[in-house]
Image (cartoon, rainbow, N blue to C red; front, side):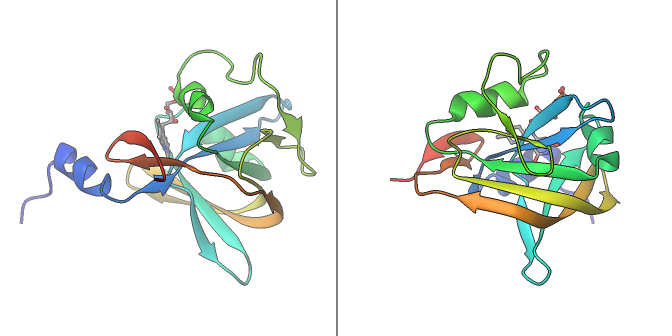
Length: 158
Ligand SMILES: Cc1cc2nc3c(=O)[nH]c(=O)nc-3n(C[C@H](O)[C@H](O)[C@H](O)COP(=O)(O)O)c2cc1C
């Protein structure tokens, strides 16, 4: 049986609407790193576990593999600019924007719909991605409209 062609696989997976997060982590020197990720998924209620998938080619990969904690910022409809910024390969995405350290020290972004701080419990290599699993240790949310990703494009809920 032939494997599915890459573009077709992307097109099919794009039929699944998601929110958008910025996943953050500190490196051993305490510098901030972040990456736009729509692979965020809740995994378990007891204990509360979540995951993100990190591509092997992402520069941030090693930091997620060794960092004790990571953060998830769920973006609101008005934060497309943050999604673009943290998806870009340009310099330091934290430069010139406001952020604050969470209780675990991971960088969090103001005005997002939800923040989640996790302790890393496992990293599973799957194909060309790492599945980074974390236990939620601090979290909060507020009302608002989400930024949505569907069919390779940003959307807002009607
Ligand atoms: C909407 C959106 C969702 C993304 N989701 C993921 C993701 O879940 N996992 C991932 O590894 N990269 C994801 N990316 C790509 C990364 O944000 C980033 O562009 C990539 O890691 C390249 O970073 P680098 O060149 O600094 O290493 C996403 C990009 C966009 C625009």
